[in-house]
View 1 (cartoon, one colour):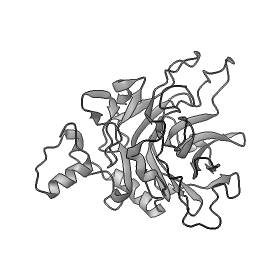
View 2 (view 1 turned 30 degrees about the vertical axis):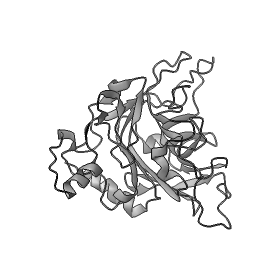
View 3 (view 1 turned 60 degrees about the horizontal axis):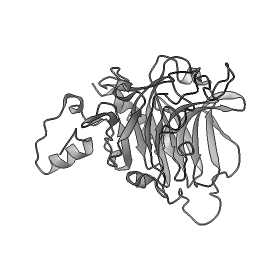
View 4 (view 1 turned 90 degrees about the horizontal axis):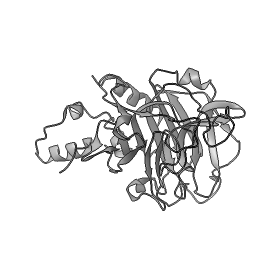
Length: 315
């Protein structure tokens, strides 16, 4: 077996009596709570480059969906701990704000027609996104796609799952900072049907207070496509938030039941900006991320609180 083993692989080999000598970064207990592991699809801790290719990152979850570290490659892994016991983190950033370029550091995977290994998000009833975020520097960034010298992007890309028909930008589930009614907000943005409308849940508090510059913060977003609801969490606790716009944007009222996402595989994962196929620079994020997790269930508040506490126990 080539490359570092995922926690799932280690557990399976141990169950049949195979002795594993772990690499230093894998010797601690699995970060994901055992109760949540059945719902985990993908997990990136940025301590596990793909064997023979440091510009790609292994998926510690069961899907095995490796992602690319785009434009910055291996230099995007930095030695900074998001929580006690963690290893390296991922740096994303805008590189040339005054040039019409496509050189921002971002990460992800894109495949037109869908990524088969992300098939558990095909016809999914729920999704949860979870991870550590540390803004570092200017956000939002200057819009390098326009001639105006002071024009800023109206969003700051964090991380999410693309829709099944996405061109690299449209999403099924996303954590992002976007302009809502004239004010930048931390949001969960979800789309149940590939050809349907999106719904936004925007946090009430100002985003710099929720994600302070130069400080690690744990965030999570839940998407219950059957109930037509979402949730936002910071450091394990739910955030006050409101929906925009109002109404049944996901079309969940009435039969048939239950309501699920389109029966298509997501076109990929985007991290730190849009267009993981590296065709356009849009909404770059200056900062660090760590332990990004993607679950195929809308986790409960107690689950998220317990998972956040789990991070504090990793010593």
